Image 1 (cartoon, each protein chain N blue to C red):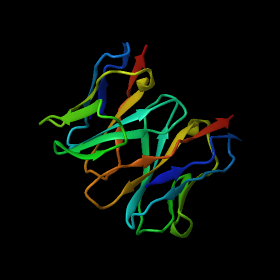
Image 2: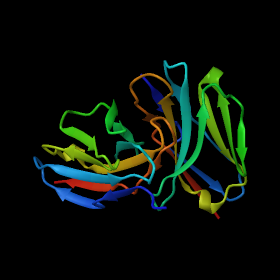
Image 3: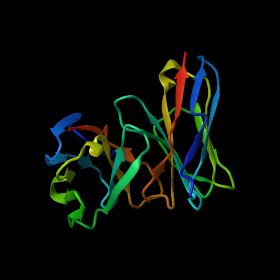
Image 4: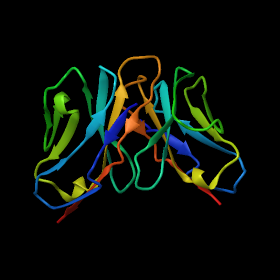
Length: 112
Length: 116
């Protein structure tokens, strides 16, 4: 079975632009979580969606938004990009909202 | 507020040594899950263990073992007879088990380097 997939792998944007990151969960997983990871730090939780409803939101500004589609895939949107948004964005899927998570390879976002 | 502390930033050992990775957590929740994950140099995460806060039994899986001490809020991970393939960044994480909102917390990770 395919693991969690994310697209694109790498992305370069300039300040003020908007970005959309995509994630496809493992088949059968209804929960998708998004994390931001900067070098040398652990993942910082951004959002979790379960059965297409937001179940958790981390301490991130309103420029960050997400949604989950009927097929359980998900998008993370970031508006008005700042240099500080440069990071690895990880998507993780799980069977349940509090079950162990399976991480994708991440999308490396660079904001210039 | 939740917090997970992995005080060891980097550990370097020689193959066949035993090594313990520390994890200390803080939470106001009475029920919660604790996790360990491995992130090898390839970047692909590997789930290692999930522990319910009600279950304080230690667990052993091959060369891996986990020591959960609720009294000291610690969930330490020991690798016995380490191997080069164990080289990775290891993350400890905490999830609340109940409540309407879900906000998991990860530690900053411990980088383990196993030399041949």
